[in-house]
Amino acid sequence: KCGAIKGASQLVLDDAKTTSSWWCCQTEKAPCLPKNPSALDKYLRGLTPPAKEALDSLGGEASMEEVAGAAVYANVWHTIESLLEHSEPLRESARSGGLELHGAVYHIETGKVEFLGQHPGLKGLL
Image (cartoon, rainbow, N blue to C red; front, side, top):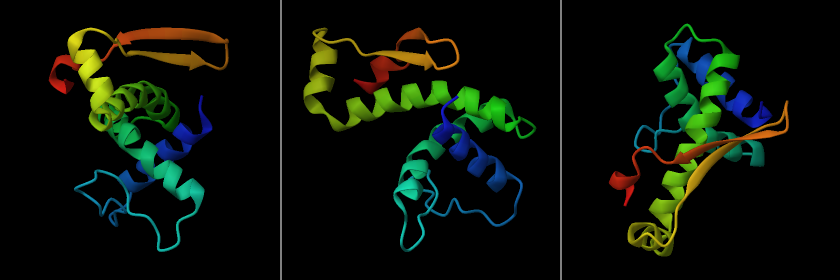
């Protein structure tokens, strides 16, 4: 599994077990960055929303491996959402039927690609 997803999943799990939350940026649904964030801090911050979504869907007793596994799939959908949210040309092409965005997961352990199809909430994103 992706090491970055594992790192973000571990951050989310650690936060769920403490009373002092680093999720202070509630409007962004992502953890706050330190004053001088490293490149890794910034990268992991972007992966924590899919990890938090995975933890929420699995429940608080899920292991890091379970959260990371579910977060990989959540990250695929978050990426499609971000593409459509930030690119009017992509959104318009998808709306008109000239473009389809399909998610996929590369399984590094086997070298196989699992195709997920289009975002399950596509109509609402357009």
